[in-house]
Length: 116
Length: 110
Figure 1: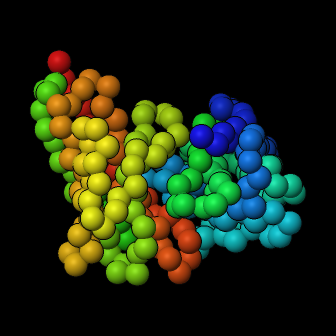
Figure 2: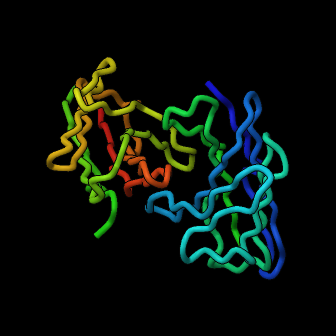
């Protein structure tokens, strides 16, 4: 199946710093990628939809200036958490639609962010 | 009301048991349905799609009831390796977004 790689897997940072998470589709071109956040024992919550070459579409309640998304190529989308605070600590997961979309999403391995 | 609702469990069952999970969705415009499996601290992985006629994949059977707006997953002959969280996922036709349920946790005991 299609492979989506996410980096880094773990990151610990100080409050106030910015953290960038990369999501790459390794063997297919992804025109659309999705970014989710998952708090412990909760479901995945869609943060934004990232479209190659255009601005991301953010879900209600997600601050676009805090969670910067860039989808500069068909194989790479990045999420930057700016001025991170402890409440931003979470599991961030990206996913991508494959070619000939059937409804299945291919997920990255996830990035666990801890803000001290 | 949540768009997709699941009983979070946990469901604790012995090996070999049959266990069933239900999931309800609120939007009748929902187009397609899936069960994903998520292991602790890992990304979700597609277990199976759910078709209107019902479908089976080995020990797993999925059913869809559009009239009552619920989806079910039946696992027969449970294995220790089935222990995970099972996510009910609904695709909204008008937005193309996948909406995830909270997940149901299954623990299979020896």
